[in-house]
Amino acid sequence: AISYVTTIKKRFANSPQIYQSFLEILHTYQKEQKGIREVLEQVAELFADHPDLLKQFTYFLPDAVQEQAKERLYKAAHESELRLAHRDQQVQRKRVIDLVTPNNPLQPKETKPGKIPKSNTTCNPEQAKKWVYNAG
Image 1 (cartoon, rainbow, N blue to C red):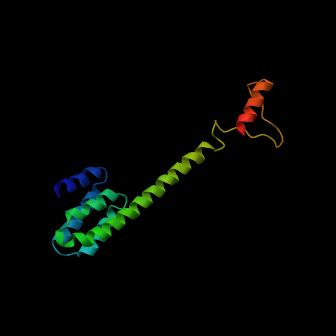
Image 2 (tube, helix red, strand yellow):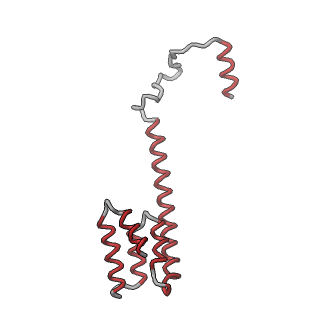
Image 3 (tube, one colour):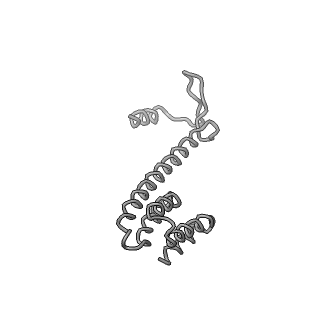
């Protein structure tokens, strides 16, 4: 249990309000001011982007509620993993889009329809045949 709390403290060193919120949730649960369902919902929301912490929280709870908690927290962890994967895909798409923006120096300059941009390189007819053949 102590290692789990230490992990949370380290993970949120730059966001101490999250760590404090976690401690408050535990404190109110221990004082029996909150039921396990409410605790699970709050922890699932607090650690929404941290599926590993959601899964590990199950083992932090008393044995009597672990099974109920495991189902809820694993579902929240799965949703978190899906959300993070989707976010990663969006970041990758943005990187691709950024590569082909008009301000990108690697992007070919636009030409008028029917015009072929001039190249600084030359090739002989034999090279051109190889390129065309290899292109498909």
